[in-house]
Amino acid sequence: MLMTLVAFTGCGETIAVPETTIFTADDMEDALKEFVKACPDRTSQTRAAVPDGEDGEKIAADWIQTKLESFMPEGGVTRQSFDQTTTYGDAFSSQNIIATVRGEVGSNRPRVVIGTHYDNTYSTVAVSGNSRYVYFEGTKAEGAMDNATGVATLIELAKYLSSDEARAKMAVDIDFVFYGMGEIDFAGSGRYITDLTANGRQSLLLAVNVDRLGGDRIMTYFDEAPTSHGEFILGTAREAGFGGYVAEPSVSQADYATRMLDDLPYTPPYLLSDAGRFYGNFAVCAMTSAADTGFFIGDRETSDSDNISGTSLDTVAGLERVNRDYAKQMAVAAETLALSVTKDGFAEALTESKAAGRGYVWATLPLVGFITVAVLALGALVPIVIIVRKCERKYREMPDPRKNIKVAVFGMDYEKPDENEVFVDIKSVDPFPDFGDDDKDKGDAGDDNGKSGGENGDKDK
Image (cartoon, rainbow, N blue to C red):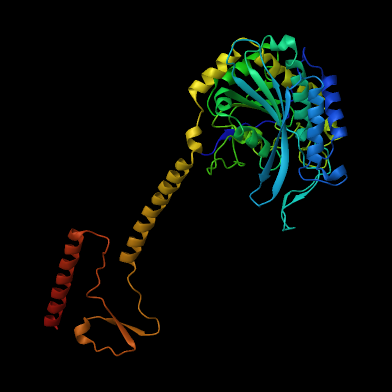
């Protein structure tokens, strides 16, 4: 299946945000507003109104790192700097900020990455050397939904899970990764995977991505096929009273926004964000509120308002207008993940998902794409050959239209054509070219009878 199916929501139904016990909406709102106020322009490679020639994304990375270091143990926060060259040849400098929390239950604990991109599209980023092309047009909005909500949620989640109380329950280690250049090539998540050691890849069993909260409800996606970790997380949400609000949508709508993955147009569209970098090699969980995603045709960030994500309306004020309970939703997202990673059986569910393998990962392999194209080409060639052969038999070579066309009624033995004449010998034309030999024999017999009739007619005369 090269085209996946996804859910259709946003039909006017509003679901009340459930109550949380670990996180509060006030804390989430304060964290969001603090971040967007300090770092409104987080666009990669922007230097306007930024001191010392540093870009806005780097200023945001510095802010996130300082914030994490205020509550993480010493050495728990690292910066992963990298350079990224785009398909247009532009070289970008960026960085991921990584906060590592180690659990205390068991040994050789599996690793979980919980990530979100922190950059936005405040300023226009043009392709170098060609002013007509841009990576994106600047919105001049601080990107409250896309994706300051994700950043604030992860900061509060990391603060809670780094506590001794939470770590005492965890049988996994967690990397909280704040991705740079998420708006351009998903470069940060790609670099995080690339720089993993062999042991790191072996221990990484789940990648969670939190992106664009603040819509009607929280959509969670795991794979095309059922997964143990997906059932575990959704079960945890139901036990917490979040069932119906944190849910995996039913399959009912065709995807029209498929992203290319490994040169083949296949990947669940809800993984178009940074989680798509992990899909196929690791278990995944994507959490979003269906905000501004092309695959939700007709879906909006709430039932009665237009999307703001990716527009000039993507501000805190705009987010409050779309969904006054956005901060409660952020608290629900954080609590769902916090309860899951600290619950007995979580590590075992990840191990089962790894053993089961990905749902339809075979369809993302480049070889499958080449085979598919070859089969389709062969399938198209066969009917073309048949049609051409049919036409060759039915429509013989046409005479030159510049010459006079005459009919040789009694055969060419009775005609003397010159260079400007073309005769059609009707005696030599098979009137039934598509029939078998038996029909042809009957036609020959008919010709003989015609000759006899003609001869008899002459005799009668």
